[in-house]
Image (tube, rainbow, N blue to C red; front, side, top):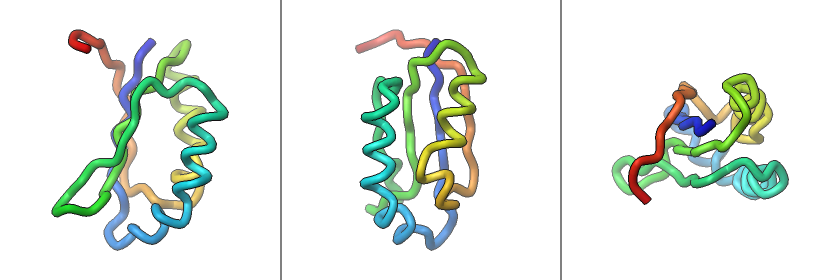
Length: 89
């Protein structure tokens, strides 16, 4: 099941993102469920994340999201998990 995680950073939290980025990338590598990922850009600055998870079910996506170092560091203002269907690419 593909799940799109769409997260918006808290205002003024760019330094949290920068400080936690290495741990976040290591988590992505270690878990092996991320199909695609990258930052959302607003006015030239990183301001959120889009992560496509390939997991068994929504519960697995929720668990992944809760244990992401970015989430644990308090980076996100909002996080939305939505089932996604790949059509192109």
